[in-house]
Every structure is written in structure tokens, then in C-alpha cells.
Length: 226
Image (cartoon, rainbow, N blue to C red; front, side, top):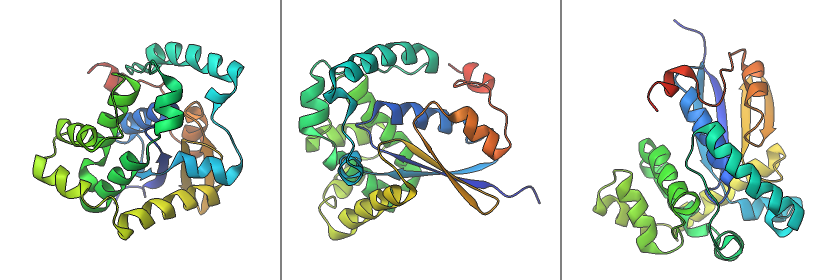
């Protein structure tokens, strides 16, 4: 019998570019580190409201820094991330409620598809500058991730159900209880203790807490495939 897996929860919203970075790093390490990775679709708007925080794009200097940061991180993380042309409309006005409800439905009924569908929604909004708010956009992402049209449509029809809405609310509230003021947050459960880490640039600290080796955002085994 091998060592017990450490549970690592990633709370994320596809509206958050840094969530995508953290997501990909943890997905790359989930078969390298001794962890049980649990993906937790959450609503960043609810966390911002609960904590009194504001999106960095609303502050000009932070917005400019973020735009430059994303350009550098694209190469460092080897993820095809880039700013939407109309950042304010896409990120601030349209939001991600329907997309995150859809991912919540996926997590409830087809958890084996959650990683792929999440990635396709990020690809739409943060790589190809495509919509993630309209039903056809969400269906397109799900089908590109490998879901059948019938499966995707069935899940889409459930995004307004009390079960899905309540689950997304509960997950978002759980992130707030851990101390979230934005996304992503990674919650590591180690030796009876809980550690909340904010952002995508603390993975070296996460490795330290887990007693694992940090080999950069693209570990050698993954780099060989890219």
C-alpha cells in the first residue's frame, strides 16, 4: 500500500486567466505528485462581492500590469493565453455565470469530463476571444471537449435547476470560508492541516507543503509532449 494521497482542491472560474494557469500546472502535476486533485468550479463575482475586492482590470495601473504579465506568462507556462480585445465587455459586463453553472452540472453528472470542458471554455474566452455566455457557445466548447451533442444539451438544460445553482453557490461559499478574495485558490489538506494558497504563482510553496519536488510550470515529462 502506497502513501496516502494529499487532497488538493482548486477553486476556479474560467473568467480568471490566472485560474487557467494554476489549473494547467496542477493538471500537469496530478500524475507526478502524490495528490488527489479536486476541481471546484466557483463564481469569481460572488467571491469579489463577499470579500469587497475589485477586478484588477478596473484599476488602470493594475490592468496594464496584468496585460503585460499575461504576455510573459503565455511563454513561461506554455499556454496559448491572450487578452480579449474588448476586455471590459467580456470580463466585466458579460461575466461567466452560465459557463460556471454548466461546469457545475458537468462536475455533478460527468466529473470525468470536467477538466476537458473547463479547458475548452478557457480556450474560447482567453485564447480565441470567443463568447462563453450564449448557449451555442457553451455547447460548442463541450462538444469540442469530447461530449456528445445529446450529453451537452442535457446538461445545458439543467443549469437553471436548483441543484446546480445551489451547488455553485455552496462551492463559492466554501472558497470564501477558506479565505478567498479572488481566484484561483488552491487548498491543500496535509497532515490534518488546511493551507489556502492564492494565485497561480505559489506552486513552489504548494510543493513544499506537500513534500514534493517543484520542477517549474512545465515539468520535464510534460515538456517532452509539448
